[in-house]
Image 1 (cartoon, rainbow, N blue to C red):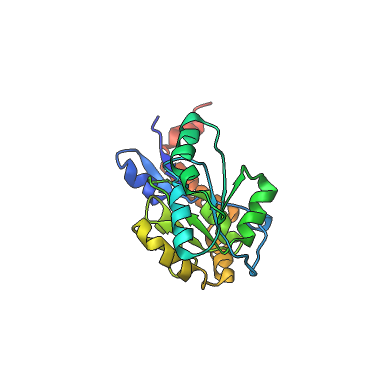
Image 2: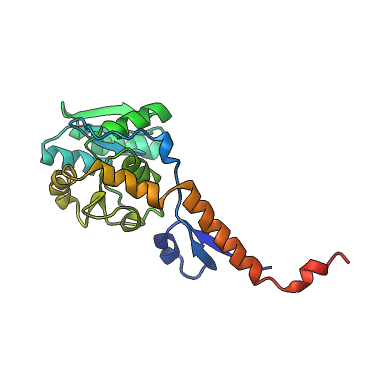
Length: 221
């Protein structure tokens, strides 16, 4: 039998064009489990592993240049993560940098909802980026580097600001803070719901079944 794959983003498909992709169906979240908040506190948020690919040091640099505090939340337990932390994060520590540590489901939602923007300075082609969707569901715009699936997730100039280089991130933060939290939430409610994802998978299954030869129907007779 043949194997057909469903991609979670066009970026994932283009990274392996020779694989037998049947369709692209974006990941989803239950937006109702994320608290919407229009009234923001004065900090930018980084939420992710302390890893060179996630590049939280770029989040510190951007927030500092933009003149706002930054909160960093995420895992730092693997050897590569600890080495990165001591090399890139510790030298950048200051009164404007808060290391939150690992945020559980409740803390994560509070951090996302209160942040003025979320920073996503990834340095690899991430195939999705669920935290981007989670932030927007909370009404929090995202400032991101144009890598991986980022352009598929963020509506540039409406639910976040996408830039090509870290040097552009401070200005992007200033722009993002002017965006409408309601637009961020509505984007997720329209494009990244569980219903939309389920409908996408169902369509693929129906299409695939329609191409299956008839004999399997009578195989047991």
